[in-house]
Image 1 (cartoon, one colour):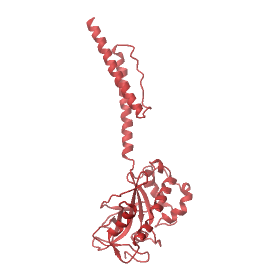
Image 2 (cartoon, rainbow, N blue to C red):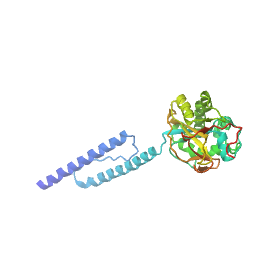
Image 3 (cartoon, helix red, strand yellow):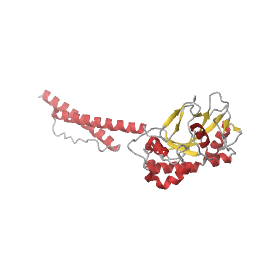
Image 4 (cartoon, rainbow, N blue to C red):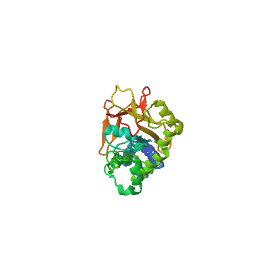
Length: 301
């Protein structure tokens, strides 16, 4: 009798421990908003050990489901961008590199790039009918310098960068993405800012610090400024691209400055522009004069 009573007491304690564990666990999950995880209604009317197996299976199922959801949550969080890079390029420099003809004397949009992700949804195809009201502005502000009558450049930018930016609700459609890029471009108004500090296309050279200071003084953030080089032996670098950065709420933030290889987007794709190549873009160097080329002048012959 003493042994049987001891077994019953042990069983009851085991049931209580498992019950408490499960109840606490499910309460935590429900507080986290994971109500879709399997919930187990366990009765403890019996005191024999036959209930241990259902309890353990229930606990195992809950732990397994929670692991999958937690893993998916962390995976999704890890891939969510935190910064947007509004990239402008100077058409004269770009076309001198890529052998195109663009008689444009203002900075144009290269793209709006999230800092994480590339080609995030290959099944989400570009559809120009969704941005018809934006097309006139895009032709002027975001032109395809290589193929002016084509929409391939916008298609490419959407597939590579827009589908990743669309992870945020504020950019979760093609219209939202392209409209926001245009909105930020016009608000930044890079041409006016540089002109305000007397930095205009000229045969005279600038110090990189002059261009950086103008942008930093006006926007109160650090830009990333990139130049082109004909070769490493050049004594002058050519102003080519300027990046202005925003956080997820579209507030201005500092851009990181890294001496890395960058890409020049084309309608059909990106070609890696090595700094050794004549048309390479790289972060401008402080110890080298900067040439901001007028539209009428040849750069690379």
